Image (cartoon, rainbow, N blue to C red; front, side, top):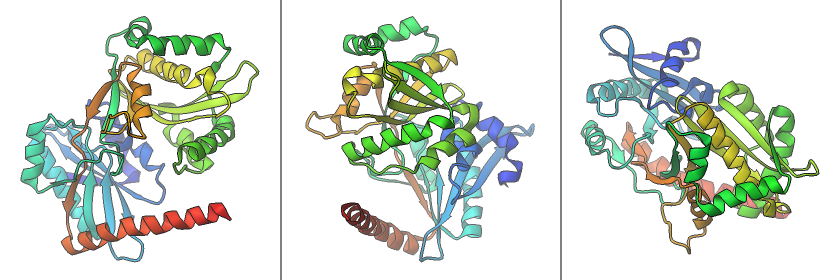
Length: 353
């Protein structure tokens, strides 16, 4: 049987998720605090001895102008992915929540690679639909990431794994006087200023400064803001990394246009990787890249940069969807892309004024 918990009794759930091999930052209760407009619930399945066998955090949000809600489990569930009984009970819990919150769909994008065919068969048997492959970040979470496997390695051994040009750029950055500091919220304004510059350069939307300040509060010791400074003390780049169990994730990055020749991004990555080594992690996750690795892809630079650290191209199984209300699903999923296009046009018009 399953249990459903809320924010008031999340402690046992959080302990399980943060100490499980499939535990993920986005599955923690701490991460749900980063999403104040969503409702947190967690589904728990227990062993006969009362210990937790599997769990899944879901975030629920009402769809504007409709009576329905979306249920989303980022990188869930957290369990033995081949344990069909646990998967079944977790789904049963989601069905109960769907009734309570009038959810039209459950979306989840598990930490499971496409080679895990047993898991895929279980999900198909349970009635999940696998969304089309998302080559260029079309789904909520990236389907393609770069992972650096560092289990049991020292800093020197990890450095030796990098391609020669990457090692050179790390050393060059230090030689040019760049320093990296772990900062608190006092550095968020500098980080945000550089993030705005990066967003304008690379044409992507950015979150407000308060979002990054909240990350440091909500995630506590799991989260670090790294800032790179020139020899003159000017902030020139920054990154945010998070650590749970045996992984460190590179979450956000920004760099100024004027100081790119100082290679601060290479030094920042090295410092975050050192944090992973210090915590005896198994994985340093560079997160998303495009699944299209052809050189004419406008996102190829991401792959080239991350592959320089000898990270491994990893394809996740992708986004699964369990449809509770087919008619609402068809209407909302078709309407949302159109609404996003309209909002994007409105934002662009406001920028031009």
